[in-house]
Length: 170
Image 1 (cartoon, rainbow, N blue to C red):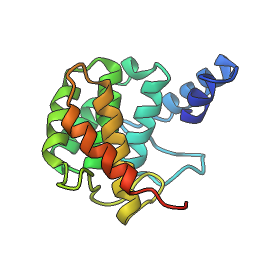
Image 2: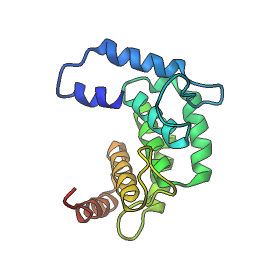
Image 3: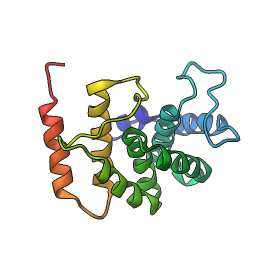
Image 4: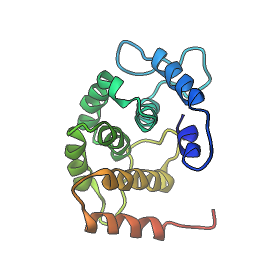
């Protein structure tokens, strides 16, 4: 879904394809406010996967329909304090106009490391770990910062500098 949305910004993508994909994901929501993953090959049920799906659905304009999922993730992630998960959810909340997104921005700022990055606790949805997880977490946190009405130039500059220093031949 995220790929279709990104592609639609630069190339014609049939809106019905996006709608069918979103409807398929909505039909896969379980009673706990996550996604079942039944009948598919997408990743095993994880918090990372559910947070990424919620963000993709929010980017596609379906965030308003997913209040239960946002509430579930908010309750879990505020306790968990994993910057990767918080950044994913923060992006979803900001897109939905949910004021808790601003709370998570403040939480993220408090979790930023002195090098400018955010270290995810476990792994990403694509199973990144170590330095790659820090890079993904930092990029997602920076993206969330850009969605905020309140600007944090020193935080953003520090994160950008971290990302620039993290570049390599790959």
